[in-house]
Image 1 (cartoon, helix red, strand yellow):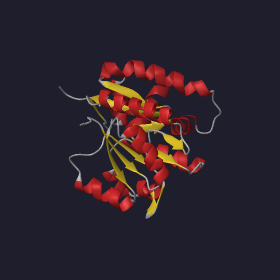
Image 2 (tube, one colour; image 1 turned 45 degrees about the horizontal axis):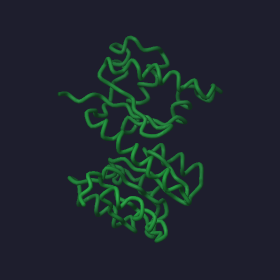
Image 3 (cartoon, helix red, strand yellow; image 1 turned 120 degrees about the vertical axis):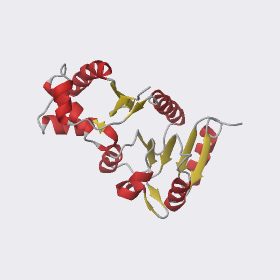
Length: 222
């Protein structure tokens, strides 16, 4: 049977591999890698046939996926959606993965049904984004042309435009906009909600593949 969506799994634990094979092989075209070296080689050799999603453990026999993410060369190769599933339950590791673009972070052991449903949502969101591109918008353009935006909305849009792959996480937005000032949890949500309603008029949208992660996209020509 030929599946439309491709998922690559970077994992060396046999128990987890068995679970992935049980729940993912019947739904997607899967490919497994037990080392970072195997994974990087496949990325270089498959430039025209990259996966729709990558699932990665953090600790591999030949190194850490965190080190992989922090390398400029490897980040250039990893220009695709990914999520992390790891036994590492560390807030700094979790924060770093989200800042580098992870769509989600599961701690082992994970709930199989929850993983399947979240993967389905990620791939559906990715399909809806096919008619949009990321783009950098100069601050002068934001101020001049996005005339209906409030000051806070201008700040948020500017942060998106100057971030890696136009991706921001909740913690970074709150930190950059309010500079350590204590604000209600819903304050950012209100500003984002209003901004998301206004942007389609200008050919843009903000999407959220997973909770707490947002991407600014521009509608493609044609």
